[in-house]
Image: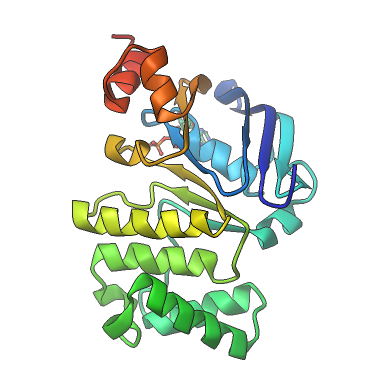
Length: 242
Ligand code: ATP
């Protein structure tokens, strides 16, 4: 366990009688790209919300960056980046102003925010959009900006909940180049996706079905284990019981 790893043991969450996450256990290593797959309602977002300190587990626990998910929520929030499904950008602000706003949230000084904005501008290719209102951004750029806001403070672990949903294949490929660059720098990535081509880019995959983990391993391991040619086939088998 270190400041870049995630360890989850028997993590569970119920809403009343409904079990949304059922005794889930896994470990994510430093610099790994760990994909969470599952049909709508499988429990992926609920798992992520528990790991990001936003939701209290019903039972079980774990650590994120060495911090206890049942107790050290504030430390977790400071040491991670989180891009939620409905990323919380301010449409009325310019791209630069959004980054300044999130810099303030993370407690970064003005000079540091400017330095990081310049770095992110280069890494994310925001260029001509920096001084434009966020509302005017094409979705692919909005997603890049949301990633920029999530990594402004250089977190060791980043959670991405369906970061590429709804954009074209070129924008998705571009986004994955950014994810790979982050992982190459040692950042640990936990990502959910419904795109099976993206699943193949992950180092390891955790397939969830009806609140439980039904298979976990590298894309090659999962294909071999389930006698399938593609992750899509693995997924259909596990989730539909084909
Ligand atoms: P998707 O792919 O649609 O994002 P998911 O795998 O992320 O799905 P979750 O959002 O974790 O699924 O939801 C798991 C289940 O828990 C769903 O049936 C959802 O309706 C339920 N659920 C989530 N949050 C709550 C809540 N606050 N109260 C009651 N039920 C909830």
